[in-house]
Image 1 (spheres, rainbow, N blue to C red):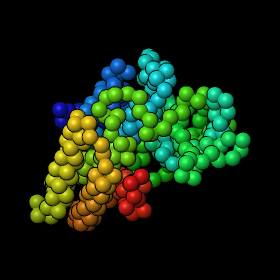
Image 2: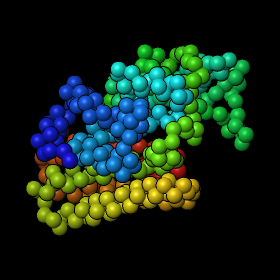
Image 3: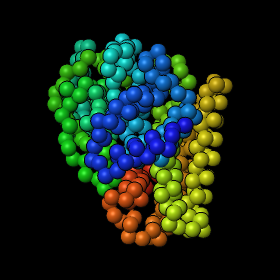
Image 4: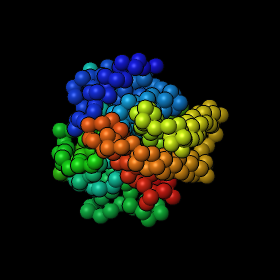
Length: 344
């Protein structure tokens, strides 16, 4: 449990900043937060799903950019379970543990050769871009200049890990919120990379329970808990100014999300322990519940915000930053209107 003075200090350090200050980055590193899901044998914390979700909720409750950045970058370090063993050991078992992050979009190509690939493309929305040691990306596979197809006729796509020295960050993140996530784009220009640095989400080489969770389910629930943390912070900042009656819809949405998220996390852990499979219907159930919950948050915030007065419109006020962070986060493709009915 974090102490109130530590939470207060972190909030002060993150209020109004465009990039995390060195003290915050040092705090993240000292607490090994980039490696929430990484096995202890690889230098990580090896948290269970429920433990990790509680940690992520607390971080988002402290500050939206802090929670969002650690969620997505620790989610990229989660790929330790998908990486070739030699590469996983090379990256994670050294003096400076890696910070992975990147883009989930397929915005480039990887030309396949004997034992290596040559990668080119432009990828958007790399959360934590200025803090990363390595970038992750997805690319269509080419061979002899032609797209390689899967058995169903769709383009073959593989994921890759590249050191930051092979990547050019394009400073184009200009959103109204989550500013310190520095979610810039990046370019890769004809970079040669050993095939061992490629991986696929559905190929897992580590046995810890966390790696048995389908990646889309993992994404849904780890992002969902961020929205919950942010709105809990918004509720706390609003309470000195508004009656319980005016905050009731927000409190109801928060109570429902807390119940559902940690109920689902317990179900997921039990499913793994019982060595059962996750059905598509179950994953759709979690996804739909998460999307509906975030919609409830959004309606409640919009209902509350006009009652908070001009102070909540000032950029230097925490209420304003939380509001901007939250509604920027809702534009993630998993929770946007376009992604509402799709399991990614």
